[in-house]
Length: 53
Ligand SMILES: [Zn+2]
Image 1 (cartoon, protein in one colour):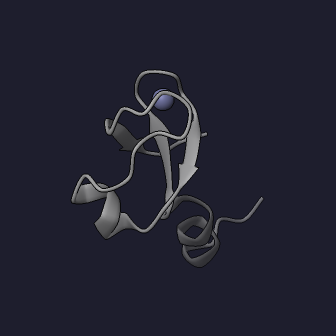
Image 2: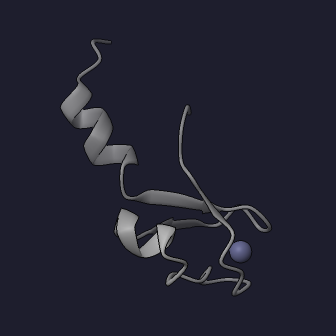
């Protein structure tokens, strides 16, 4: 399958994954980097960017 940078960005740019419980969370990048977005499931603010599959 061809890879499109645009589609890639759309799918992954605003998606973060909780480091503790692996819950996916969609949020604006800046808010996450500023620590404003807690995990929906466990409440931790340690989110990582979703990358790779
Ligand atoms: Zn969590």
